[in-house]
Amino acid sequence: MITINHVSKVFGDSKQSSASSEVHALSDINLTIADGDRFGIIGMSGAGKSTLVRIINLLERPTSGKIFADGKDVTDLQGAKLRAYRRRTAMIFQNFGLLAQKTVLDNVCFPFLAATGKVSDQDRERALNLLKRVGLSEKAHAYPAQLSGGQQQRVAIARALACEPEVILCDEATSALDPKSTNTILKLLRDINEETGVTLVVITHSMDVVEKICTQVAVLDAGRVVEQGPVEHVFAQPQAEPTRVLLGKVDWDA
Image (cartoon, rainbow, N blue to C red; front, side, top):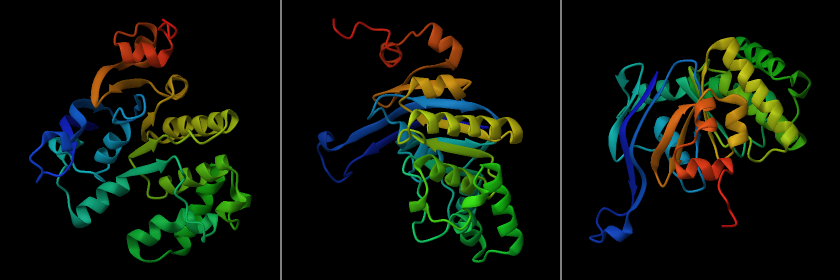
């Protein structure tokens, strides 16, 4: 379980006396993401979604508040403990994040190399099995530039699974893909969640993505959670104006 407890994030030069130099990216965020959830975090551009996911993975540190994983405060982890936590919370990015000069197989093996400084035969066998799981066995010795966007994202998913994470953070993972590839990736992520129990946190601006894959959703607007709950309830009875805008339930020509 991930618990986000009164998390705020302010960017800016603390030496500046003027508050106008500060950007309040997140303000008093409180969320609980249960084990095995498919949890959507949605909002318009600038709502704070990517900042929040980077704080969950501790790529950014909150200005105030705490992050708990399975009841343990992880906010200030450093060194080996931080690296261990990040292996438990893998990330999938919009731009895939693959290493262009390495083969598909070497990209999937990279987490093993980063963790231990070497890649064993057992690691390579596991990587090949993961490529089979995402339907890309035949692309093991290809390079990222030889793959479509959807195929590159499937490689990124295989790489994320390499260290058997407990949580996968998907930061706009399908926004660069066409509708067919998006559906393929969403089905793959849903199936992996159902098969392994891995928790998915899906950061997106698309209500369609949330509707297809998520069971719970939180809506962000200007760095604040304005609505949260089961997807079917939030979609059927949106209470906050930003939610209604995202759902297209406002008269945009008014």
